[in-house]
Image (cartoon, rainbow, N blue to C red; front, side, top):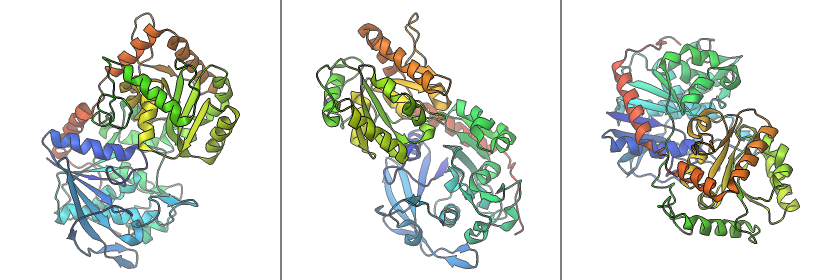
Length: 488
């Protein structure tokens, strides 16, 4: 089967979040299963491509036309890459926005990208299935069922649409339809209209043939008001075409026995290297080394309310009343950057902070920390808690979304479980879970049992890729259920 992935970011070319990891790993896993896979990305600044494969194609946008190119990239582990080459839209300092906020022309940028993906499928690399990811690619199914609805070259191609985070919709004013070249007839409550605005994510939910999200628990949660962000009714109406498939991780990159970015490799058979990594982490963050048995709490995250940093803010001083140190890596909301800077100043040698994302440091935190904090308000899947398991770093998580699917609460009597979970979204509940973890940490035998339980888990992409392959097969054999819009 031929599968075309369409996404706004993906490693090894561009990354702002976990989506990029998925776009790198899942196609590789599908190739191993015998499928042909290509990935289509915008060519952002700094991304190098090879030859032009489609020159000066015509993209309508309102009363004007645009003429971008499609270029080819390298073949990486069997996966072929293509890029939309339009410097006006994509040769910018940042991907989605700048310090003032999202780029005001994002509707035009990503509609052009979506239309170019369809043209790629028509003229260059015809697939059986197009697999789209998040709101930036939602116009692919919308345009295929409207502007391209009668096009024999693409009308039989099935579209899978994956929601990586229901909290990001791509909402624009009504006039963005005309600027982006989207049929005006789609501005109605059954299509793109959302409280007087245009909602790209809604378009993907309505017009894709099948919907997926990145964990079974999250597939249930997004059908509720708490996690649906106003689109829970739309999701429920497509529930028969929705499935939750847990993200995997690439253990060729994220496994301490293979990791070239940490000072000493280790495995479940010999954990000696973890202590070496802990010393290196303490050195990097200039944290106290007088007692190497002192637990290190690690955080690698985007600083945002979604990630539970409001809870951490509530109990930070309470955590530091315990004999612990903290190593924090991330960037995001300024209020949380200010919080951690203040904690580092107030607790020198006990709180270490590095603002930004550094891949080497992310690996070192995973390897060197004893406990990993991930108290998210909601978490579609999450990857760091899965990385932590493999590195013998015990997660403390909130029981939501993929965190609930991947972490099993430790049971002392049975000796089972891989971490510590709390359900109520409160600082008190988080602190209680941390204290439970610290209590078990004081017993070497018990702690080693928890570590080994986690390190034995297998969340590789093999199983998830096979589930996606079955979904692609089902999609290509199913009749279209999404409506075709033929008038403007």
